[in-house]
Image 1: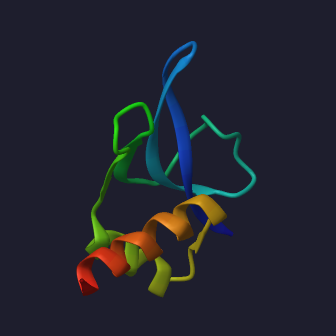
Image 2: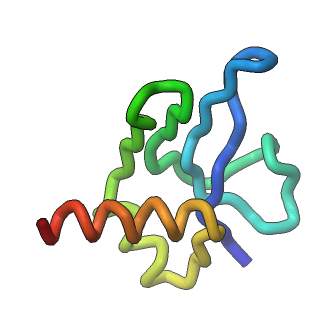
Length: 82
């Protein structure tokens, strides 16, 4: 099964994350199928950049977002509604 999840990048104690589509059996930082955006929690407010069109396409094809990515997508939907 494909998952939309975070892939950790950055130096030790300075994390940043890429939002990727990957096989659920692959390791967290292993091979991935597609890159959808990035998340930087070290900024205030945290920077979230997601290609929503690509994300919706992958979800429609059966990819399941992780809990963290689902919260990010929900927050983007709320901000777009305001």
